[in-house]
Image 1: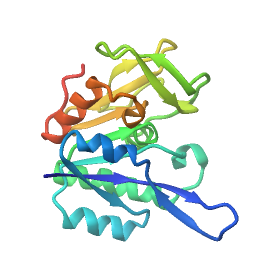
Image 2: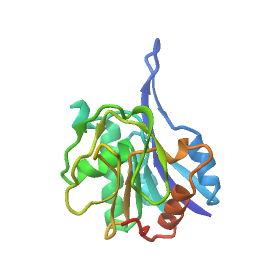
Image 3: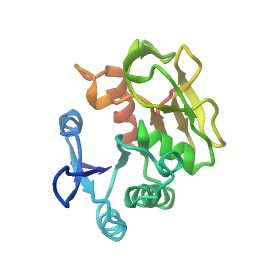
Length: 204
């Protein structure tokens, strides 16, 4: 069985002095398609580092939810964990899928900038990739240009980059959430399957 490491969002619980790491369980149903087992990475750097080093990981997913430090101005433990993930992927040549916030993290890591967008929150819109049709959209900050070595493979009608990849690093970024599509998109499933095999999807 293949193993997929996933980052989690960090949520403060109203009325309690408590912060919880959490993940949409639709990710587990999506991974069922590949007979892949999830490995959850806590938002504590040394624990996440130990987990990554102690397991054979076939794919790292930087999941969505919340803002990266380039947007919020605050460097959180989750930002640190996602940087650990990207550095680990480079050392061990492990593919990475960045989803929404995760794609923003990939772009920021490579030195790119994010742009405030409108009409991309709780909406659907078409993208220029294969026969994908419309995708879900839940982000306030998008990408208008990419830093080296990232390349674009999907754009929205208003010109923002919705999908990017780096063949050398086996990194793919999506600004939509594949786990939220009902039913799951065959294009998304094919892309993830290719990453799990250790290959870079032919998306350009």
